[in-house]
Image (cartoon, rainbow, N blue to C red; front, top):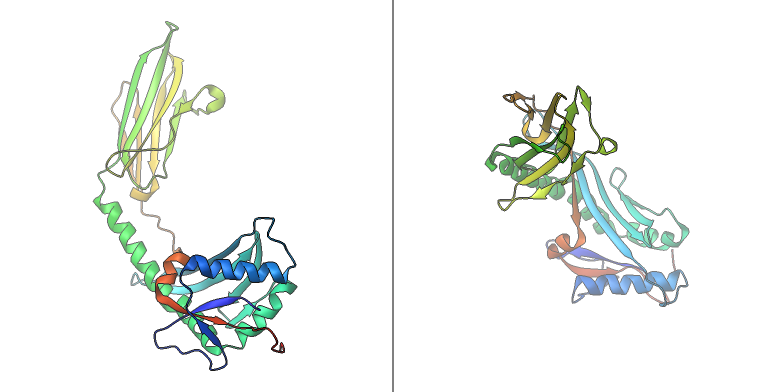
Length: 280
């Protein structure tokens, strides 16, 4: 018996010689195929085994803001190792290990499966990627601007101060916070502590960094949020200076769609090998 794969029911019919079944759930699909792989690799059921699938695509932004297909990914992994992948350039399945050769031959012989896989990666996946990119950009525009606050309080040592730099209201969560003392960026080795990025109650994020310094030290806090092109510097006891950075959007964008998301379109499973049939 060989691995099963899904074909969409819409406008696609399986080869007459194929066996078409309707699994009750995605969990059942994985259960059946893990059993097939365990049998093929002569494994018993005393150990844990993992079958994974990743489907995705990469697009490049064009001058008219549309995405051009660059490459696609449809691959399977078993127990942490690559098992089978689709080469979208040549429209064939690639088997990196000997145990996958049987599945490669059978899946390569089903032309409709190869055509659908290639078509999905080059078209529908790019459509989904475009939707998520647009959604993400709209979310950024809806968020309130980043705010930076600095505080100082007396430390236990009379000659020292505890400085706090608070950045809040930013989205997405990637942010850079630098506290400088006398021009040098401080690290944990200097005693710097950080809350890390924490959620606010409005879907934005915050981060607090703390440092104990001498009252005679000159210190400032720099906050960089590349997604909203903000670079703000605040000095304790002085007014803030803010810089708007030029946009630096990456041109290559990637969308990975998990099998559970994909399965809403998939109904018909084709078994590409049956016991007693001579292998080609």
